[in-house]
Amino acid sequence: MATANVARINHAEPGPIDMSLLRQQPNHRSEAIWNEQDPRTFTCRSRSSEFSNREPMVDDRVVNIIKALGLEGLLWIPGREIDHGLITTLVERWRPETHTFYMPHGEVSITLQDVEVLLGLPVDGDAITGSTQKTWTEVCWEFLGFQPINQDRHKQLDGQRILISRLLGQVAGPLPANAEEDDVHKYARCYILAVLGDTIFVDKSGDRVHLLWVQQLEDLRNPHMYS
Image (cartoon, rainbow, N blue to C red; front, side, top):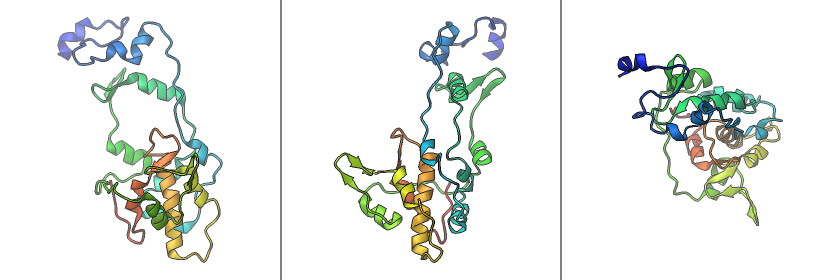
């Protein structure tokens, strides 16, 4: 099909040659651009505010746990500035029909190997699974060492999602030099869960992270390796 369409390409009129594949073109952002309309730059949602004024974690006890989990690459991601123009450009090139970016030199996509190289995350390991049938206030106490406050309109825990700022509040001060192992692990879980919610497990809430992920941090003496 590509060979048959080579002679039909008109670079002065960019757009899909065969509409049978890219069926969403009439509603795609690129359609407005090709019609000389300005759809404007996206304002991207980010969570950099929680980490913008924080120094990177330097406590060796916590850093060593993060390294053992294979998450060291995430230590340097929170608080990075987002290039809204670049994100907008990538969205304009993304096609949901094929799950690929359509670039001038051809189609490209993001692979797990790309994630491994860019973020230093492991791609070999078990799938992340866990039960959602939990009493989440008890999960907070058992794994994180605090009881969330849910009074009036101030809900630190909303369903199964905890405020990232509440997690960071738990690690606002330095970890005591003589802290017991259990306290070190709870401190580490709060920080790691906040980092996960700020990076790879971002959702539409804008300021929360699902407590489901903390179940994978239960045994920090011999942490399991997940993909």
